[in-house]
Image (cartoon, rainbow, N blue to C red; front, side, top):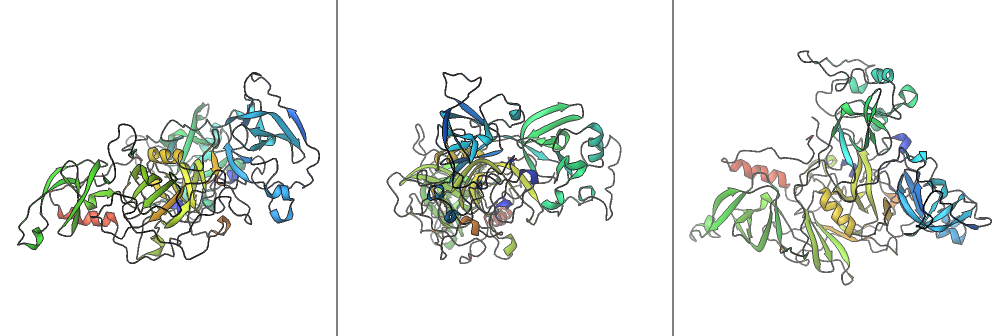
Length: 640
């Protein structure tokens, strides 16, 4: 079975929309980045070309229909991405050519189709929205063109269920098993399905017991998905997999390894299908439902009943052991700092309370735990935060990401409140095309999305698409902190630039960090009134054998020599953003507080000869431990 794409390869390469009908022209939160998808019945996100002469404005009582008149009226949104505006005006494409009032219009965020939100009792009707503007109780306005007060409307029958806010993942997910598996726009008839799925390796062409597998056809006219790719991911583009078969019945021919977010299973005369959150249908015999697993949870430092504190260490090697350090022979150079004794194995993702004491023996670092045993550096990811940002207000929230130790710590002022491990971008000093190190610098979270699609066809291992990547927090261009359910290599470099967290940990940080997401919204952008939390990403030149216990223990992160750039100036070779990300007017600057200090771009920054990756060091050390038998790592994504 194919392995899922490298964490978020989507984070560092040019991304194009997989589902053409779903391309968002809406809710421009983040400029360039992972392009995304949404059913836009109308151009909900591009600026409405209405005249500055808005004409007469009328205010009427809402017709709530069958809703309880004694309760707060509600609307259900109809567009996959329904924009929320700060006033009853559409943001202008060119603010310099519009009225002073309209220059202040901006998108605050968006709501996903089917979501029900409370509104105030009056509707404001203007020529730029004849259906009327609804003022949300949480703030902001939604045009009635994209909403209804009829909460039982037939238009909502295929709307996805609201995201699960009480689970680590907002949706259920399914892994596509078959190259060429169709994603249908509507339910196909039996004959249509037989024709369109003929020859596929899974499903209708499953071999019967005792029969040899059919040989894949070959030839210039053979579709890419029927060719023999010898177990490798097909080298096709997003354009290659888009299709207009049967008059548009097939939206896309999926590549093996794509993930869908699943809304509902349907049984029909032509078979069983999974309906995804975008409303398209995938045959169930091509989809393997993902079984989520929470292998560890971060530490809520200072929470009631929680005694653990910094420094902390996570066991990240499946072959880690407990070590004891005994007095050595001072006359021997290799024993002057002590003599090692290897003990029992220790489970992966064990969280160890460290004392802060460390030793280096035979060139290898060891951390002392409060239980008296020692943790080898290449088996561990430890906390080592950098200094706090300048001009930090008392109690102000900020996030420290240490690339050297693969750790993330959330602070309130100088007080750590949450600590965990992450997977950041892999670096390669010899092959620039594979060098995906995470950008360094001081940033702010610019926007948050409960979930959004990320995809690309520029990765070295072929195209991939993960629908509704959970708990996304963009902090620079399309670099983001987000949940990753398709791998469990946390504590090691794994991604193509983004900061991967377990879904559980990502959800905790998502709920804690600014900008605050109003109830019922799916995405929000930072503004002066609702600022984003600061994020500091840095490396630590100190050796791993010297863990620090405070936020001031490491040198400051590298700063950028370049000036800030607007979202629209992001280059195609940078991380790309999600489907629900706002396509902001290119001439318009972000509303976020101007405190960001951009770091050098990952593909341009060349730090002084970084040390080899953790994996390479671990493999080298493990070979020396002949008594240890390699064990295959268990991953969250069962498909790996």
